[in-house]
Image 1 (cartoon, rainbow, N blue to C red):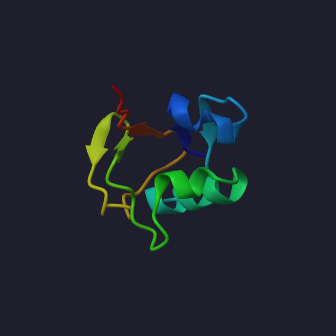
Image 2 (cartoon, rainbow, N blue to C red):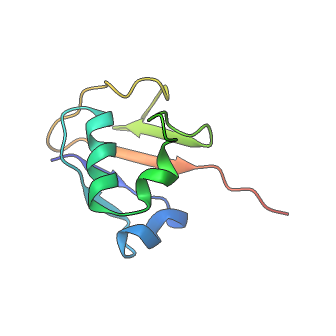
Length: 89
């Protein structure tokens, strides 16, 4: 099962876990799995149409993927990392 690294601002939805397992063979499947397993996380990652929010960046095994590349294949042992832009003053 792929492991997903969760950014600190979103860890409230994962009970503080920095990484969680996600079921799926594509990045999109894994994001759906996260949304089902961790209420509130899906809305932080994707809009109602399923597109990744513009302030969210997704990496697979250290390589950034396009927000539109949710069909990117993943396998057991792969790492998906989610990063989010943080703004402040």
